[in-house]
Image 1: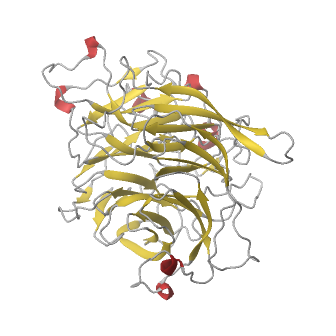
Image 2 (image 1 turned 90 degrees about the vertical axis):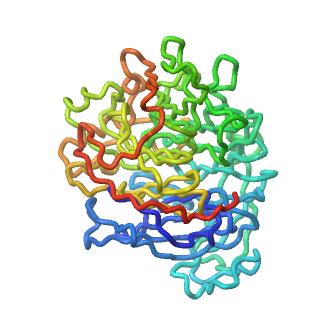
Image 3 (image 1 turned 45 degrees about the vertical axis):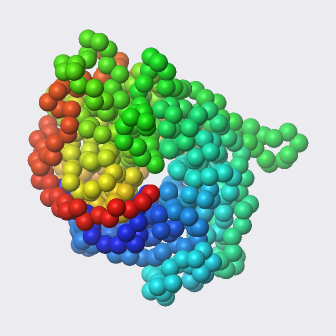
Length: 533
């Protein structure tokens, strides 16, 4: 594993709010990702591989980042950027299957982007950079649609698995579900015009403060939100036909689980007493079996209280829920050890073969899954990596990469590269070791049918893999809740010990399996600017 903070002017020294990898790059050896910043722009970048093969062990260099293009069109700082899901081999092709991008800003606008054969004039229309020459861009994009409905800042968005719908949340305390217009066809005009034909087909207003995060279940059935009011809500999403309107449907949001800020349940950090952030980005696992939430606090019973009762410092944590989700006030797992709140979570999109049975049994805090998943957590001062097969300790803790908090995390489609964005205006690249034994992935694993996200029955599909044992594991890619929850007890809370309240820098973490790898970390060195959010 190698980590480095790349010292380039990503967004003209302004804060970087979000980033995301393209799920289906045209060239597997050149990973493409987008960043969103407070300079009112979205930028596209590429990471090149030194290998001549697109195999899973391709080597990516932390110095191989190259600029592709700038997307101008926003009139305010951009808070979130997300690529639309890529179509799968078993899904029915639709007009929304084309490569496209969504971004949202502080003015309440959501822009949908599509590739353009010629440069556009958004830089002039939006008061963009005059020192950039579009002829230098390697790609050209245009804003095809503008989604307007939020009164103030849009803080987070999430695509449905099929790519036909979009969830958005913001300062107006409202969750909105949009029916996304199809992208322009090849025969349509390539001008820079935009339209606002998108429709809000569903909404919910249960939070009492700014909503800072939203996640859409990969099975397409659930949407989760998290807000400053220290609450988390999970909604079941179904479609209903509109009487008398042929072909029109509305999205009905039914709240199926919640965790409010009650006197007996304070599971999330209080913005009035702890450090704050613009985002609380929660995440579903790629199989839909887990929901992981940031900004958690440990709610320990008296007999589990820390030994140092004189300390009043909050015990920050990350909460993990199984798909049962009831009640949200009782997490299935709580991951402690944070000196400050965690703000963003992102799962690796690939699945990994399980360790040997002996190695799995050696970890008391593991989930009964027939495969392993990795996820990363970003806090004020650390980037922490976890493996679901042994959650008692993290895989790695990376510190001193940035001088300000992490705001978003993105994994490459092949799981080789992790990129983290910071409020200090820089991004860090973490390249995982290309160990063939540790990178035996389950291939072409699907969860449900992405073309029918609303209330469709979930069934496991077959999968192929370079390893002969992968097909059997893939048959359980959508496990029942009973398979996910630990048997006895069903709720595990990882207790905080005084000596482990604050994470420490781990240069070589010895996990049961795979073998530990060295961590080559290049600190930011305090060079990040004091950017305003």
